[in-house]
Every structure is written in C-alpha cells, then in structure tokens.
Image (tube, rainbow, N blue to C red; front, side, top):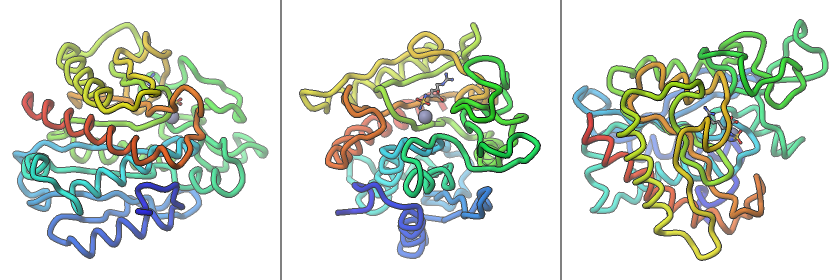
Length: 309
Ligand code: 0X9
Ligand code: ZN
C-alpha cells in the first residue's frame, strides 16, 4: 500500500518527502521549518516548476495534523503531493504550471507521534512549561494564534483540550505556520487548514464580521464541496459550507482567523468526513476514497481561486 493510503508514522512521512525531493529536484524542495518542541524536524515541501522564482504565480498552502488525533488528514496532504509530483494527470497540468504549492503534512509531529505511542485521542502539542503546569503538556495549536487570543471556545485550564497556551504563539509549531504565511503573504492565495471530522468547509471570522470577499469565498468553497460530494459513496455524509461561527461553533486564536486577518484571500478549515460513524477513528480502508474525493475538491479551489488572483 502506498504511504498516502496508510496511517504512517512521522519518520515514514518525513522519508516520503525526502524521497520526492531527491527524485524530483526540479520540482520539489523539502524545507525544515525548524525543530518541534521535542526536536523533530517540522518539514514541508514546496512544489514549483520555477523553484518559487516566478513571483507572478499564486501560492496554495495546506497543512494537516495540527490536531494530532486527526489521522486521516496527513494522507490527504501526502496524496496531494503525489498527484502533483508523481502522478500528474493531463487535466491537472494547469495546477502545477500556474500555481506554487506549500504542503505541510504534519504540523504537530510531537502530538502526532504521541497519538501513535501513548494516547490515540491526543489533540494538542507536547510542550512543557513548568510555570504553566507540571502535570499537563501542550496547548491547542488551533487556539494559539494571535487573533482574538483566549476569548471564545477556550479554557484556561492547562489540562483542557482547548487550552490556548499561556500567550499567543507560545507553541513553536504555531510560529512555523505563521512564519510561512508571513513569508509568502504577498502571493498566498489559498490557505487550507485540514482537520477532521464532520464534513465541513468553514471560512470567515468567528466574531460577527465577514471578510470583504465573502461572496467569492463562499462561491469557491461551495464549488469545492460540490466537487467532493459528487464523488461520494452512497453512505457518505455530504459537506456543509459556511461561516464557521454559524455552521460549527465560534473559536478564537485559530489558524483560519489569523490567516484571514492577514489578508489571505481564500482561507478554509476543511473538516474531513467520518461517515457519521467513526469520529477520529476512520478505518484505513476509507483513506483512498477520502484522498481521491478531497483532491478533486482541493484542485477545484485552486483553479477557481486563481481566477481571482
Ligand atoms: O475546534 C477546532 O479547532 C476545529 N474543529 S476540530 O474538531 N478539528 O478541532 C474547528 C475550527 C473552526 N475554525 C474556526 N471556528 N475558526
Ligand atoms: Zn482539528
């Protein structure tokens, strides 16, 4: 079974990125953003036909496994790399020619490994700060960004799943994500923050404002959902598309709101499906289907968003 159709460990995911980098040096650059709290390299790939030198191209950024237990998300990121690099199909050639890609398959490698070795339901990072707590480790990376930090859908209990951390960007893994956004801000057109579960395509702020281009955001998001839903199996749950505040719940300090506030035009939180049954424990035999249908949706957003670039 190909690695993107399995629940791989972080070293295997790292090795896959490195192999793409050495087999396709003209297309793939592997970047080590720096060490995680526990010292693992937080890696991402840049995929570009021009080594990111043609600054007239928009950038599409996606990350996965910010929440460790959401195991079905790295496969989608890895499969996207596979389709762009190892299995580029004629109908997708425009995606590679016209767009530069940044893909980080595991934004929280310490938590991801911990969810494999110790606690399958681990969500947070694995940082230790004795002045915060001597018992509980880590913070919710998706509450740790510097936008309305600590205001809603958080808990000040350092042991809570939604503990935002002691201050914005306290987690090094959060900083790596914001560094990428800020480094490429001038041409970052799409940011896809990939989570599970629930079959949602979420956008916009969680306070009562909507981004100025919300009509375009909804249009592109709805097209993504329609594309995915069109490939669904009969027992699948269909995507709901809308403002996260209304469709799901408000949250603060999220990657989505931070990226939106930075001015990235098309920002989505994608909650992959669980088929209404499995929650985070999606059986591995579903990965292939999820990868294929999600890629169709991600490709659709890339094509449409580019029209607004
Ligand atoms: O709560 C979260 O961080 C996300 N859901 S999850 O089950 N994957 O943890 C949803 C975040 C939605 N984004 C905003 N509300 N901004
Ligand atoms: Zn999540």
